[in-house]
Image 1 (spheres, rainbow, N blue to C red):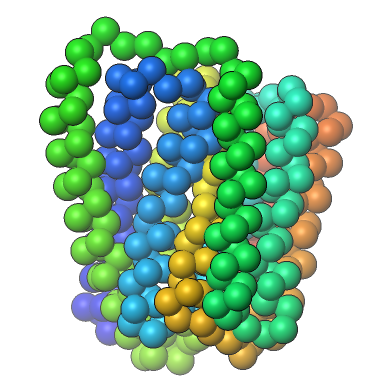
Image 2 (tube, rainbow, N blue to C red):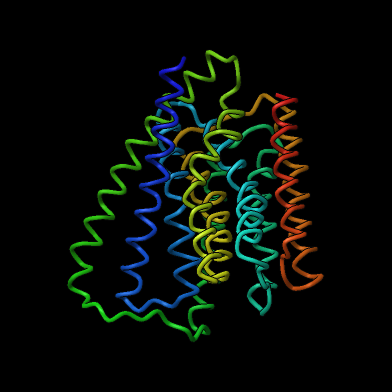
Length: 313
């Protein structure tokens, strides 16, 4: 068992590193292309930092282990709503949530965080659910397009575009290859650990793989907080939740529909996801910001969620 644990840890570290490489390279490419700053955070960061979840989801589905992906997605969304925002605020100070888009984003956070659990109410995620999830992604992309037309600020750089077209694209391709290899290692090791410890794949995905694949979001959140780029932090969190719920789970369901046989997992995830969404909305509306005191509450919610899942499962 020790070798599977070592393989899992090594794969998780490689996944985190390759995810960070991907984020950095695409950010550079976006700068060269003069993309708007908020769109880079919401679209590029959201999609790219969710690439580990996407690779784990596809790999798990191909290997007929889609429950691992479902647990990973639910766990990742919980982690984004609580731990990523909480730790980033504790590290870099309160995050302001002002403006028309931020207020509209509350709806998107609640909708996409709860959508997978709503579709799972009948105990299964089938291909029709997968199509619904992917279609729902279109609405988010449409919203980003409207934001792009209104947003004024642009990223600037003095480096020539030609340099990015080779160096950054090369780094991007290398990072994607590393993601594929590390995702394979995580799925293989998690499956063997689940069997030897007599734990469900959903639980392993929820509590362990979710943390491993969310390391890029955690690293990016801390970096954004340190650089006082709080809007980048929120854009990444919003985008990652949407991509996890709509694209990753949608593709997984299309490849391999699945059922969940553990009602305790479902009920606990639903309760804590609703609680996390409500707390985030309440904190955002009271002071139009998430303060350090409120960040501690969010971190505490994730700790309770972790403990409850361990006890129930």
